[in-house]
Image (cartoon, rainbow, N blue to C red; front, side, top):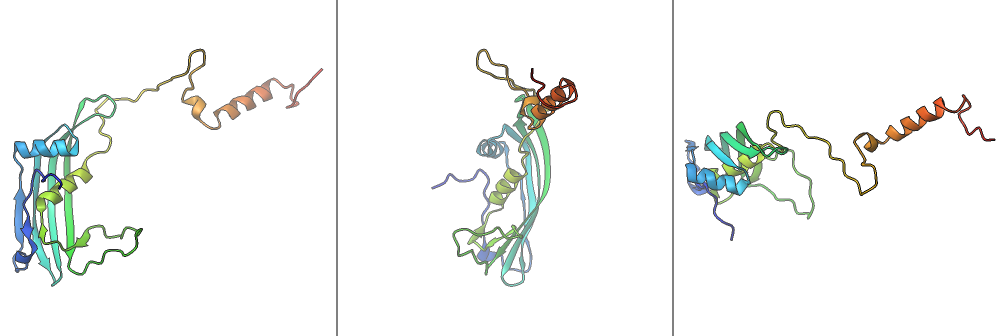
Length: 191
């Protein structure tokens, strides 16, 4: 069984069928934010809030609509210096009673990736965790961090630099040498 999420607030779907939306405002405490940062593999989450509502739409659809605001700290991908990022994203999930899962082993992703089957309970805490994970920068970079060039070669060999990795760099150099040292003939002048 998987470990419980650091922030959880399950709402039973059977109780969400009224006319009034169920509003929520999740603001995890420092311990919950710390556990969530460890779960997501980041340094820290100084601020986190998911505010929104779950409402019935028609007879067979529940909609969770919210806004996620967060401040996260991640290590820079180049220098490992801490990088602070502010996140503000809308969150939308649609839970459908008549959602049909694909029957094939392999299927294309639907265009609408906000829809999923209606579960027994909807957990805004789980939605917050997922939305935050998706909103995190993939490659946080500290201001001024520059990726340098690394040149490695076995002993006695010249390192292959960035210019040598370009597919037409060698051809351009060869063309220059041949046109400059061939007496205009372009070929081997021989004896």
